[in-house]
Image 1 (cartoon, one colour):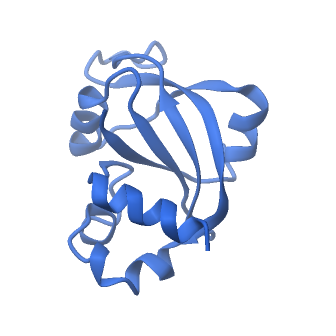
Image 2 (cartoon, rainbow, N blue to C red):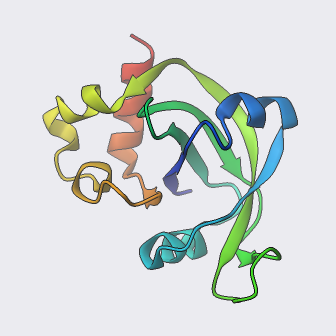
Length: 135
């Protein structure tokens, strides 16, 4: 199993909406590296749901329920989407400020490539985020 982080502006779609709807397609990704990351996702992988914009915090976990497939809303087949489902809300959100202040995260793409909307999460970082969310 692999771990991921997917960013979304909460004013366009938030974790509360996913919790209510239970499933959705993760689309509207056009960055080449983010597309590559989506193409690497597999059914059963887990992803953090990150509220970008003013919030800048990891709020919950979703499960990848499909492999990447061409986004039916796009004419160009290189633009792909995946299906996800609600898994659980973190006990408390983990903010970008907390992540920036922790040396364990210094080489993570979230800090190195801040505009990237879909990125891998190394297993040790995944575990650390979960631990922080319990405090």
